[in-house]
Image 1: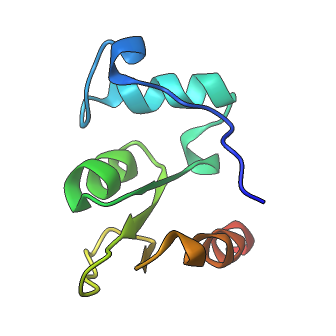
Image 2: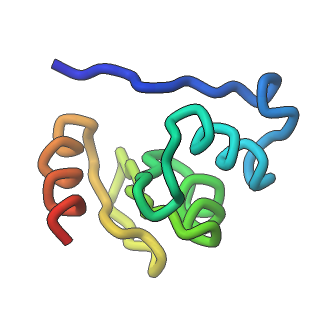
Length: 92
């Protein structure tokens, strides 16, 4: 069963991606350091490069042909793959 630990909107953060405030607001909501967090999204820049610049790990959701941006910690084609990838990233 999947659950959501936090949801942060751009309105609540007073910023939109890639402004670091939106990622930092989410980290505060979760009481996590960047190194403890993983960003999952479908945009190679907004969801991979920007969070990685703060020290977060990032998983790219590439629903089409898999593309491997150099900064991504993992690339998945379906959210069904996420649990396995997160388990692997947590052990690293």
